[in-house]
Image 1 (cartoon, rainbow, N blue to C red):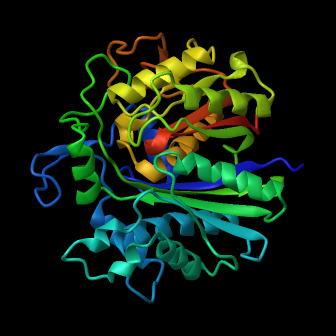
Image 2 (cartoon, rainbow, N blue to C red):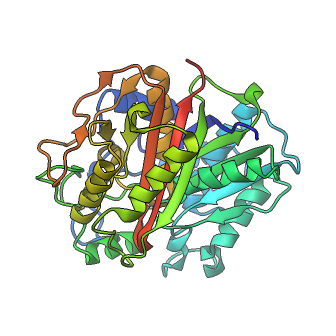
Length: 382
């Protein structure tokens, strides 16, 4: 069975239009969260990381599009164009495309949108990306709440193992929109300050937006310095509640254990954890219980939500890309905002950016509907 690798990548975010911009800012512990005062989307000011619209339009114009595209489509196209160009891969029948998102073009349902409401269908989003670049295969649109980004990598790996494709491009993104913000606000989950995952003083979640893309391949000829191998992945749904995770961390725990069994590693082999860490009480507590059950309580752990906010269907891919660069540079990135542990079980939160020789990291994600996914990645270029 072929090894499967993650390679060329791009992040479009509040930091800029490439992965390096985001990674450099995180190394320096610079948050992308800012206070936004926009009564059109939320009555009260809120913290978020937003992609600069004028800069986005400038980058999108370079693609010389022949038709109008929604804001999310522009973000995804700009990101994927960069990854495609850097890879140099010809789009034959052996190349697949996965689009990861939770709400897609939800903003076209707004009364003032110039786009037809059919554009809100996720399949239409996939078709627009597929057609723009000339993919020979139909796009697979993966939308499974907040595990979507990590799950998309697992699906890409499986498609390559099944010999359906030699390469799969994964692109992920979600917008900060009125629909999403009011939804989380109805749960009383939005924080009025920058989020602080796992911290006793946390006050809730921030929502952010990014677009990101990556090449998943079996061919080592297409690897880059920060490439990693996917050595294990698993998903489990705890079916606890439509929006509340299992109080025992059962689904996440089983995902982690299954991923470690597939990877043939034990807890001691994991150098650090890139956790979900939304800064909500139930999520953070559930994760702490699951990590302890998996004997990972001493493993260095961070959440990147304090840099980007929660980027929904893009978060898993975004945080995996940051994890790749963390391994490559042998640097543990700080979990911003953390002051004092606010969960019932011990965790080893990374409080400041620290050098550490690292080879393997665990990425986890959990989401509404009880979904949980874990993936384990190993450095290729030591």
